[in-house]
Each structure stands twice: as structure tokens, then as C-alpha cells.
Image (cartoon, rainbow, N blue to C red; front, top):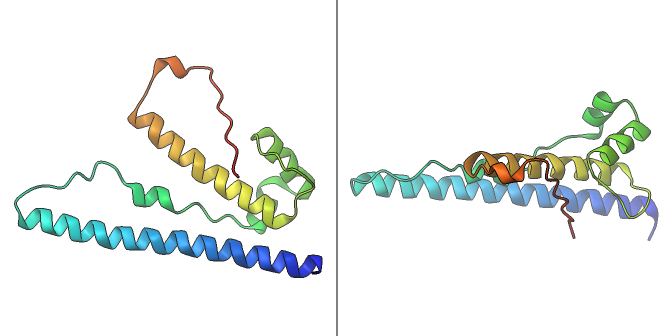
Length: 132
């Protein structure tokens, strides 16, 4: 299989994954609306303090946005390295874009969690996650 075909398949797989996440968020939103309606009919107020549907969909950065932010491929690689993103080998643009998308999505989840569960013991602690 040629490199271009593999790149196209990977890009399609990433697009399908992003669409699945979007669809899941939409289903959750509809289900949450139904739960809220039932709770209201039963005279209870649902717990809507957490908004997990907003955490489900990762941001959708593009190659163009990354180039606009950082300038070029090498600058994106440097920014990725500074952010703690590592690649097992020379990444292609789809991998860089996916890495930044997931970094921003994970950071959003972490920030929300830290706001909901603050701890002074976490000061100056760095946590590294591996995506498998």
C-alpha cells in the first residue's frame, strides 16, 4: 500500500472518529434533554452542574490553523515538543493535527476537573499522559 493511500485512509479514519464523537455528543444531548423533561414532569430539578457533552467533542483544529499559529511544520513540531507531545517517528501533518486536537481536548477536561476538585497538593506537579 502506498504512502498516499495510507495517509488518505488515516485521514478518513480520523474524520470518522471525530464524527463518531460528534454523534455521541448529540445523542447524549438529546438523552439529557429527555431526562431533564422527565425530571421536570416528576417535580424534580435535574443535576445539570456538570456538562459532560461539552467535554466529549475535541476541538477541531486544522493544518491551516496550526500553520497560522506557529508558522510552519518545524515550528509546529517545536510547539508540540514544548507541550509534551512526542511521536515515535517523524509525524505527518494528520498526526500533528490530531495530537494538537487531543491535547486541547484533554487540557479542557483536566481544567474542568481541577476547577471542580481543587487541591493545593497539586502545585508544581506535572502529569504526562500516553495515548495508546
